[in-house]
Length: 194
Image 1 (cartoon, helix red, strand yellow):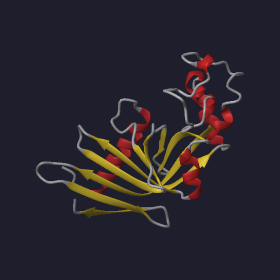
Image 2 (tube, one colour):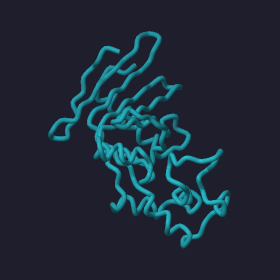
Image 3 (tube, helix red, strand yellow):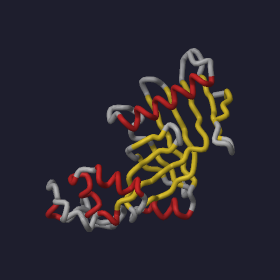
Image 4 (tube, one colour):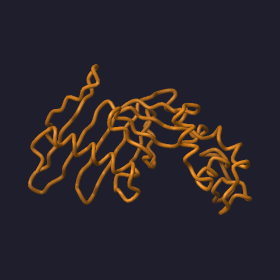
C-alpha cells in the first residue's frame, strides 16, 4: 500500500524510466493528446528523470506537429493493467527538428526504422491501404545515402511535464496523488480523492 507521497513519486518516476527503456513495459506506448484534443499512441523513446521530460519521435509533416506549434499543451496517459496504476502527465510540448537531441536520435536509429520518414506525410490520402513508403523500400532497408531525403521529415516531440496524477486502483480502495511543479522546479505533492 502506498501511504507516503515520496514513495508515490519514486514509484511513478521508476515506472516512467522503465517505460522508456523496456519495450515490454505496459507504459512504453502511452496515449499522447495535443491541444486540439486529438489523441494518438506513441512510443516513449526517453524519459529524463531530472528534467522530467518525455521524448517521442515524430514526422515534421504530421498534423500533430502543427497542432503543438499552435498550442503547446500536451497530456500523456500511461496505464499498467497488471499493476493497476495509471499516470497522467500534463505539460508543454515542442517539436524539435534541428536540435542536437534530434540529430543524436536520428544517428542512433536503424536505417530500417528511419525509412518511415521517406514516405508520404502522415494523413496523406491514398487510393487504398498503404504504408506510404515508396515501393522500392517496402520491406527493404535503405542505404544511408537513400535516407538523405528522409532526415528533414524527422523530429523529436519533447514534452516538459508540469503536473502528474498517479492513481492506484485497488478493490480495498483506490489511492490517488497529484504533483505540481513549482516555479522553482520543485515538485509539490498532495493526496487526492480518487
